Image (cartoon, rainbow, N blue to C red):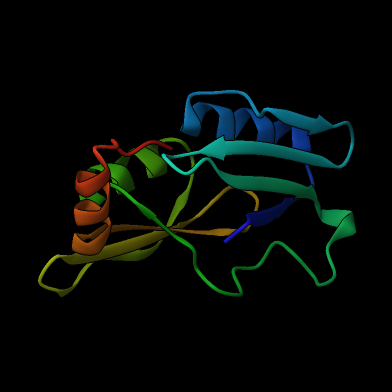
Amino acid sequence: MATNNFFAADLDAARDWYTRLFGTEPYFVREGGYLEWRLGPRQDEFGIVQAAWAPHPVGTPAGSILFWAVEDVAAALKALVELGATQHIPVTERGPGFVTAAVVDPFGNVLGIMENVHVERDLAGRGAGRQG
């Protein structure tokens, strides 16, 4: 993955919401059109694009779900809902070491969260903690 982009009609609201979620301001801002954060041990790029620039209709949950690695899916789901997201997929055990859930952010994007034994092993092997 190079960059994952979500869309929002109200970039100011999206900036506020994701800044609270990530605990940091975007590192790159193109006024009126694009916001970008670098997150996690690999500094993966997460962008919010002005919805008017989307190549498809936005505001309805659709497309693939990018799952973010978290230590506790239930706690992360609760925190996301408290921030104003809507539960999309409840906490679901997919198998040993794999638990998922997903929300729809206030802008219509699906945000997945996952406990993933492979990510845990990878991060432990590199001595890196989880961020973002």
